Length: 87
Image (cartoon, rainbow, N blue to C red):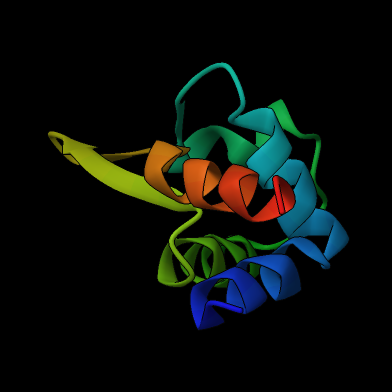
């Protein structure tokens, strides 16, 4: 099994990271808006930690819009996961 897949599954095992990833299914979200969008009761450093975990394993990608960090799903990684489940 691809090590990247293992890291993705581990990352999604956390309820907060799963909610973050799930919220990005059909849209992009600014990192500064996650606490409002998801009604998360976590501090900004904790949110940053979870976003970093999702970025590091390749599930989400970050782009910049001025000073804003825009998060979206990495479709290449989603395709890799889908291919794995076809086995």
